[in-house]
Image (cartoon, rainbow, N blue to C red):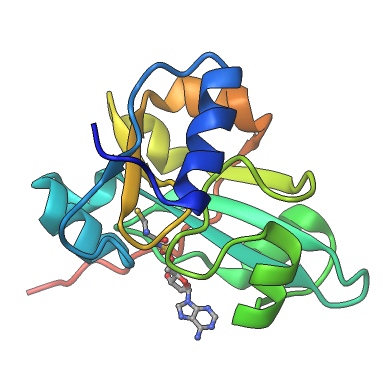
Length: 166
Ligand code: 5CA
């Protein structure tokens, strides 16, 4: 097996420590976005875990939201959950608080513990895929295990999709 790059090796080590046995895969194609990851893996975009960093505006805290690649996170719903206004983090903030660049942010293995929420839609799948530290690295996991290793709180923060009529 080829050696993993530094960022993904760190995630692989953390996954092993947490008892997750699936391998970190470094894909030949980009997995930087949920759509690219789904195309590279040949799975449904809804099975891709987006690891999104938000910043609480008053507390300046990093908040990690794990959401389905098919969903947009509604910031006002997230603000209601947290009890504070939030904004999407900048690339600089993401790197400073997680140790990873946008497009490779994993659900675990950050430089510091992060308050973590998991959107309920991710629980609808038998298996999901998440980023593993770089914009080409991914790993598969059962949603229940993802919940366990992140100690996330299950929430409903996906934007409500307005059905198209006629
Ligand atoms: N590797 C894939 C999943 S396997 C991945 O990391 N997807 S992601 O959705 O978690 O990361 C991309 C997200 O980063 C985008 O959905 C978007 O919310 C955020 N993002 C992209 N560009 C920027 C930017 N310039 N500033 C802030 N956030 C950004």
